[in-house]
Length: 464
Image 1 (cartoon, helix red, strand yellow):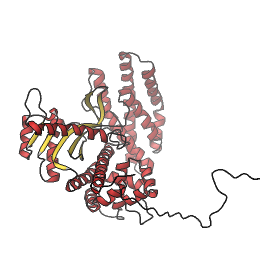
Image 2 (image 1 turned 90 degrees about the horizontal axis):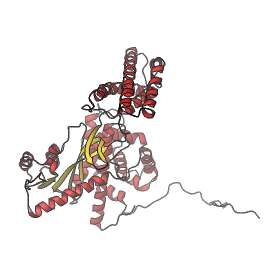
Image 3 (image 1 turned 120 degrees about the horizontal axis):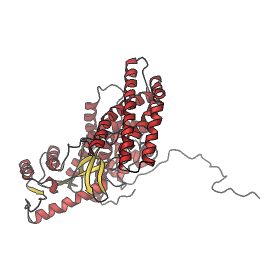
Image 4 (image 1 turned 180 degrees about the vertical axis):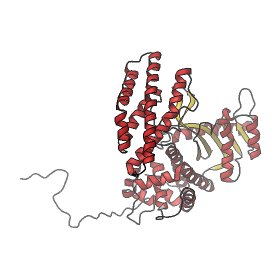
């Protein structure tokens, strides 16, 4: 007697199973609530405003803005890579409903979604986020009359920066990229093979055998000379490739040549900074901490176990109700506590037409000048935490409420830095995309709060 195989049936179906299943979506699914709540027309208007600034003309096929906005929303609330986002939008019914694709078979691929995010940039996602916060204020879920602000750091996904690590990374990146370009750079690799090998030996000597500071500095000085010679020859190869210009590079070869040019420019700024450190023992101003993202900088935090963070500074503004606005500082001195304490209120006045009635910030933003400026903007209750024995500008219950609201902004910062939203150490290879990921994390927090607030108003319990 034959034994029935496990895990299946030999009985064929009378009718073939359909590959177009009919699924009814519940009203209390978060993506359904967001789809029915968000003003998508307003979001499309904001995207068109960004596209008009960044595109040369309107040539080409019209973009699918509504599905792409849905894809951006989906990635904000779920934090998935671009390939996973494409798959989820193609096969996950709530995601298709969120993207407005329930009546079509078309799905944006991962490159289209990534190109859309790159086109929007940090300022574009910020504009969309502001639209969500404005809608939350209109729906009564947020109160723009009470606001608090603070500064935080967005850490980059880079190794701990040290001089030998940066120079060793330069060698590996140059060698890898030069193989993809063409004959000019293959000649460069052939001519510099000896120096490349000697430089790699210096990296090995530094890490394995240099045990004292004097020995490390000596090896680092020798490595600096070797890299300077390699950089000089790389510059000549780049000039030769640019002057030839007969063969137009395409695809990976063009990207690799651009990468070589960026690395050459960055290492030429790094080498004098390393020499300054060897000569004086002090870190040079504007020190490069990563050759691939030279815009990054060190942020002294003074935390226990993490005195310095490497990445970008952000200003976070929280409205009563928990909705958050974020501002990125691409340069080190662009945002400081003393400046952002006032700028946060100026930004709120620009968005909502008037400054908040009550506003709080920590003691780093306190000064008589800032208090006077905030009152001139229209802030009635200025809750800047005083320094030393200086008295508060507010008293009684108003002071207690502002202190309570001020502590809540720390919770919002911790939430966007959690694994759910991924504000910290995003998978980005440029400062611009780090800004996109940061704004997308804040957008995810606001969308989640919007869905919960709407569900609470309707008496629904969110499921999914």
